[in-house]
Image (tube, rainbow, N blue to C red; front, side, top):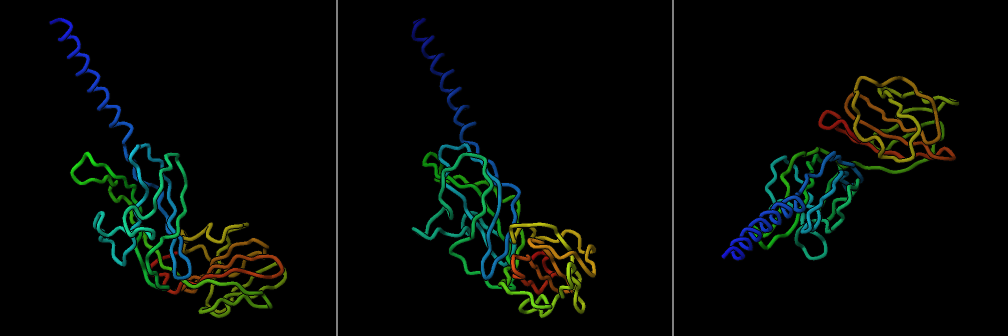
Amino acid sequence: MKKIFLLTMFTIFFSSCAEELVTVIDEYNMPYEIKAIPGNNKVSIEFWSGILASDFAGFNLYAKTSESMNQPDDAILNTTDQALPTIKGTNHTRTNFTIEIPNYTFVNNTKYYITVTAYGTNELIEEKYIETKISTIVPVIPRPEGSATITANIDVTGAGTVATRNGNMINVFGAWKVQYFGYQTNFNSVVIVTNMNGFDNNAPYLVNGLYIFYNGSALAKVLIGASNTYQWAYQNNAASWNGV
């Protein structure tokens, strides 16, 4: 009887510990530091995540023209088998992800709201899936972009001339003002303008210099390249979203 009693107690204790261990391992942390990156009729999402759960299957991406999102019904289906998760993956390491949102039609100059959740499948629960709650929804407006060569002017399609180059200086043109963001190698290193009062009449001209122009209603972004080339983007509704 003592052996049976001790075996029963050991089994209960072991089962309790095992259940607690599974709870810890299968914890789903919400993706965080979510950011939207606009493109030309496309949008990318950047975020941090590190999921320890053994049944982690990937990420669900959401994109709508309103902030109302139903989980998981509004999640975008993946392109391979038209199922969830949107992005398949089993990376458990804390990682900074940048993902172009697939299987969704974005239209330039239209405001969207996007977010991301972690997703997994579990046959032991009624819903058969696990998904983190939506914690952060971010706005974004996709916009046209392109490249050009400076003659005397810096021209942006849709905006016209935003500035002129005079030696080592960039001088704004017309109603445009400029904010200089220093040496950058990534066109999207700055997307959101956090200080709408920080625009000036001129800025130093620098190869790999990043500039955002504002005329009171629209935003234009310019990254200077070699041999007087530059990359540009234009977003015509700064009142709706102060990003470009």
